[in-house]
Length: 441
Image 1 (cartoon, one colour):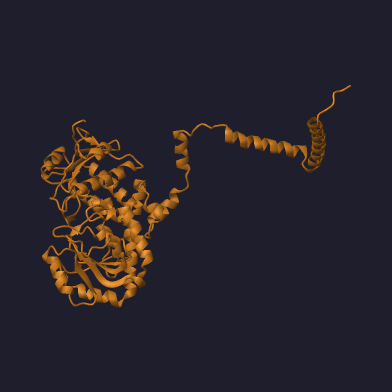
Image 2 (tube, helix red, strand yellow):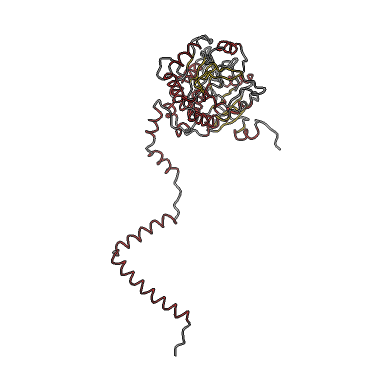
């Protein structure tokens, strides 16, 4: 006699019989709906998918990446964007890895003056050709900062602490251009000084006068202008864009705006000249109390911005006003920075992006302001041109990186010596300690 089943065992067998019967019915129904060959195809497809998910594939080789890059169809479109005269999209404006060819296409107004400077040093007269090691050694008396770039790595050979934060900002901007270079850079050794003016010679400075024989570098503000708390250039562009979006032309203040210290007779004459004009908003800034100070991006709330050079040097503020949808009004500029060749002050040009007075002083200012106030359409056109050609092209991070690499390549083509690291310090180490020599601890 078979042993009796427990209640649990009986229910379990009943469930199994029902389940088998149900499965048999389902199989018959499914086989009618899905033929066996389709079932096999589905199984094969699932196998392939699961294999791709769970079976690791070897990483691509350098040759794989090179082939993909050569096959990429993006270069013609990139060239089309760069070759125009319109504003660069932010994805391009912030691209620090443009090739030399792309830089040539995107920023054509920068290169003729660079080549002109190269030609000035190519034959310096007296049998001196190019740039010699003696030139660099003699320049030590100017107490500048000496840099070498070897195998696309940057070394600081000497650092001058005068204008310390400015020199540090120039080095940081240069290092960014070197670190992001998409192509090998030539070995180069040079020196610069981050002060406002510099004697002529085979070195780099922040500005020069027309005809001066000196190389120009992007000024420290393209990295950061720390002392007046303007902060980083990239961040300033973003904040200026936000102000312009919140203050369209109809909401901007309609007077000629400027705040600063009246340190020179030239500035004092401006103050005296504009007194009594309704469009005058020229006032002094007291740096001891900060009375009258505004954030740099708040300049963009004004339609007209005055640009005034320093006591004996360029205006560090000019690039900031050009980054606003405003009309920058300047006296006749004496000092040149690396981007000034992209300025268009021709009153009859459709691309005019700045108003520059014809006289060396301020005598033309009232007539220039009357013209702008009468013709608002022209004023808005000049303001829009400043954004299109300056903020969104020649003052972009991409343009600065391109300029660094091109100007150093032209300089390197004249070197009559082999650059060396010597006792230089790699830039990351210099960044940590701020010195080229220190005691281990």
